[in-house]
Image (cartoon, rainbow over all chains, first blue to last red; front, side):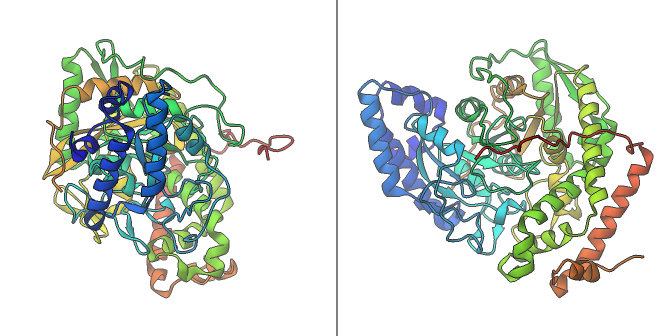
Length: 469
Length: 60
């Protein structure tokens, strides 16, 4: 098999071939590294490619598998991870000037778990500086470009992960999500992205953006790949004070594709308000395909959503500015212009406003919980707009120019504020650009949203289309 | 008393970029407008999950 063909495969396609030794981890890793290097000039997904280390790890995996010690679905799978996740003795830049030479002396918990599963880490992929933005137009490492249209943003902040998965420059990736940073680039790049429940996956060894909103999660080619990656990374970690000690489901076993008793909640007042008509049509068509498989749809009200935007902004701005306060005082010119503005803005809210935002969060959680007494999950557009041109500071919504950040994160913030799990699955193309459909579930019900996402994925909404590079 | 963005940031030891000041004032007003919506709900007594964990919350 050609190396490019191997790089184009999903984990669920590669795993059985690796397990029965019909292909080798070295072949797959070489294919991914070749593709990563070939697309670097156009896509710029990676900050650093570890060719030598990766090939060495792939050889070790090959020997282990040959000896009958197959560790599971991700053994021998090459993967680039977001450059905000610490790897011992490797530079973790956070795509910043300030941390450009930062070397961690320990591995993040998720890195330890990837290595235990036999993953071959191919390098660090780019991000919006300090994960504080949605364009990935990075002043220090250059813009990451969307593989579907290199003039468009890949979304962010995990834009390197999104672009690399879409361009077959990695088989899967780990991103982080504070206000949609996994789901935004996953939607914009036409891949699957999962922000699981807050506390489900350890954040130990991942540089924070906003402590109470941050998540680490899978960005993959398929829903089952995301389930497999969650399986590896989930679980309690005493080193992360926000980690939750609750049993981990068997996510892959829970994916049956059966949705005939599923009750889908649709919230028209917030999640379908001010949505680009092209996006809305694809999402509503997507819901219909689940109805065709036996699911039911019920409209639900979540009144506190009207305050979610304010609570998300106050919380994220304040927490991010607290983290970067000293550098903002002492070396402000070393930040990119856009995030410096956000850090300045984050110095302005009062303590009372921050605490009121936390009160809104509780109200929002209660309202979502009430809705989940009537429905199993909510389905909504992931983004209300299509990805914009690199460099534009606006998005287009039904032909009108609208504020970029507010619109891109509008359907993201509520899931970070509540900590609820949310999955985005591609639901088609509009103007040659991918559109994502978002499944939002009750806390720790990842299996349910993965199953619904899988059922939808089986209807082949992307019709096998891939970016042409 | 309504302090300007420049005065507020100065009091925190931060020198904002000159070209950001208008944008910061605009964004601050937008946040205030969004906050005005809170008048419609009664949040004064809403409990929140801020916790004081005895003995610390981070294992070294």
